[in-house]
Image (cartoon, one colour):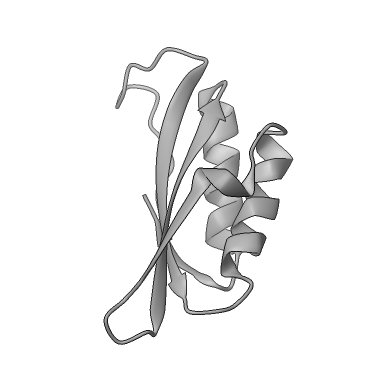
Length: 91
């Protein structure tokens, strides 16, 4: 999982920033992702997470939107998502 390069994207902050996470199907995946994002975006809520299950049921994809306030915040979010053992990847 890569972090943002300062020259990659010209973003304005604050902004609504979509993140897609794919992880192993686990009853607590959405709660774990919520808790990770909440550390970086105190206004984040479970209602901001949409969950889909793969055809085989082995994986869940979560689509969520965070209130991005800086590139550093986004880098920290992706770092924490990468460190989560339930997460396969995040975009």
